[in-house]
Amino acid sequence: MNVGAEIWQAFVVCISAVFTQNILLTYFLGLCPFLGVSREIKSAFGLGLAVTFVLTCTCGLNWLVYHLVLEELHLEFFRFIIFIIIIAAFVQFVEMVIERYSPALYQRLGIFLPLITVNCAILGGSLFMVIRDYGFIVSIGYGLGSGIGWFLAIIAMAGIRQRLKNERIPRGLQGPGITLIIAGLMALAFIGFAGVLQR
Amino acid sequence: MSPAGGQSENKKLMVEGLWRNNPIFKQVLGICSTLAVTNLVLNTVVMCVALVFTLSLSAATVSVLRKLTPRNIRMMVETLIIAFYVIIVDVLLKAYWPEMSTKLGPYVGLIITNCIVMGRCEAYGNSNPPGRAFVDGLFNALGYSFVLLIIAVFRELLGMGTLLGVPMPYFSTSWDKWIIMVMPPGAFFMLGVLTWIFKSIQIGKEQQTP
Image 1 (cartoon, each protein chain N blue to C red):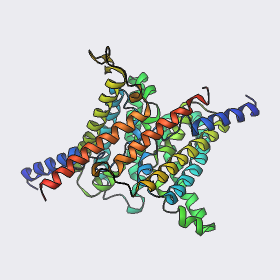
Image 2 (image 1 turned 180 degrees about the horizontal axis):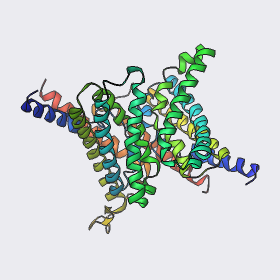
Image 3 (image 1 turned 45 degrees about the vertical axis):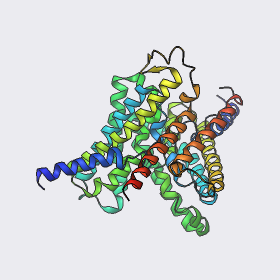
Image 4 (image 1 turned 180 degrees about the vertical axis):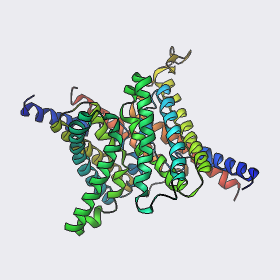
């Protein structure tokens, strides 16, 4: 396949990962931090940025390692361990770089970075990319799209929850209950995007 | 510890894991990797078996190795232990039940990042003997599984009129199928409503015993 067509496919995959196949609202990945860190827009924003960045880079990295190393050695079943190690190492590396060069950014993102290692969306992105047999550029597009999709969902949720803070909600529904129901409504809205792209 | 004491301890762990401290209701943890497969009961059962296996054995293993693991790398060691068991599950599924393995897609692998596995290893396995860690892991996983099974039963029954693929008498004929239940929003709604019910019951109990 020539490069132009691949970039076009990457673009399509990226858009569909943001809207029609949102990693959070259709695949339920990254739900724990989504419920935990969506109380305020500010922290949701920081976490969303960090997830987008890490997801894009680790998708590319894991593609290289999987196709150039693991497939050659026929060690595909080892991918879980390798992927998680790469993700953890990458997060650690990013943390060190940010701390060294941009203390201000570190102050904002620092606490979220360790959380990302155990965010299922990151590992899920890499696993999906392997299962769907994407090429290298398409994988990066997929990682970027999934990250943006996650970012969009958590920001929207944080905005809604901030407004709900002063509303009267039945006691049993407070906290996770109402968040899940809002997430359901959001997922419903995102299904509306399904007609945008023909798969 | 006397055997009787051990038994009551196990019983306490059972109640905690299954109900009072249920991982899903109380802690709302680890739903990511499993909620996606709750549209069919069969997939859920397989996924839950995989989770019970992984959680109980990795909690026990973490507990066996707890004195040998240096504190600063223990998260990494725990992750590797969990990944080891997940790989066993994945390889077994691929070998003996390839269709199911394809259907579950990446979700078996995602047990590694399931917060509940890591959470139990960290909170309990790390500071308790292997036997008790195993029991704690087992009942937490079972508590988790039974909630997911409730969700799966409702989603498959209301959404497709079947249970385990078998058409149910009323639901497959005259019931107007709620397609939304088998789609992703249905899972969110079901879980939201279940947490609501559970929390209301707990609040009611607290008010009875001030």
